[in-house]
Image 1 (cartoon, helix red, strand yellow):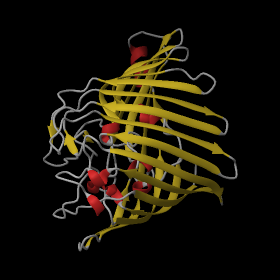
Image 2 (cartoon, helix red, strand yellow; image 1 turned 180 degrees about the vertical axis):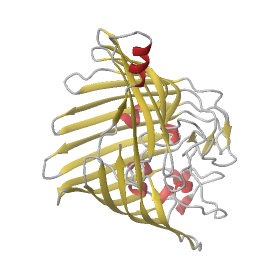
Image 3 (cartoon, one colour; image 1 turned 60 degrees about the vertical axis):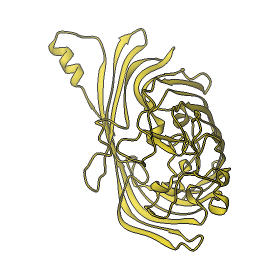
Length: 388
């Protein structure tokens, strides 16, 4: 159960102010376990392997802590804010050099008029992807752009409006003002880079438009989104860079005995906030593996998932698949048979020990990861996730 700190209410009492209901909530998740990973690349005479095992952090849910609060302003209007930081439970270090890199926003909310917030926030692609999902390599963001929890899908300097729910329907409109849009082709620096498109990483991105709709009522849930990320400069093939775009539709139906989840989407000119690049799996430096993106890049992405209650817990099986034209778009020339379609197969089981604590086990197999032909991966692990 989340613990409510009535700090603001006490301050209001000391100042003689009364009547306004104010609350601040401290919340968080700690998630840790043991995991094994094995990535292998065996194409064109290459034979490279990357293995690791040990403590894993944030597998089921990213470890985090945060503060969120509201103040009743009267007539159904509330002032709201949220500040959230991720951390690595294995080392105690923050997940970023930012103080609140996961979320940081403030705004106004009304049951009648919706919510308007300003700051660093999730895109509509994140908010509207409602289907059941996997972990790590089995997560849908390894094939989809614009719907993962990666840096490109937390939008800085953004304004976001979410309508109130009307018979289960909601709409989301977001605009991120961006900055200089400077591109860097020197490599990917996770601590400073905020996005990736056209095969290059960029420290300062251009403007972001993100819109979406969602529906949730009874056993049916569905969502759809469109994201456009402006990019300035040149791509690695020497042409003018184009804005990266993504759209996706997804839905699920709960038959009680089993729940079916389906999703389809497309990326153009890059994959916004993608979590499926070579660097996200293993370090194969020197093999020349990289992203096959260019201004004409496009992909078609698919997800199918089944979940069912078993022995007091929930078992989930998922398949992710993405085809692309990457074989024609490798930097410096066509990739030919160096690229392939991504396939991931995932199975997990989550068992709740209480409302706040769950244990889990998972296994995943993937091939042609990051569109690199014959780059394969295997993951397995167990863990515990506790929320407060």
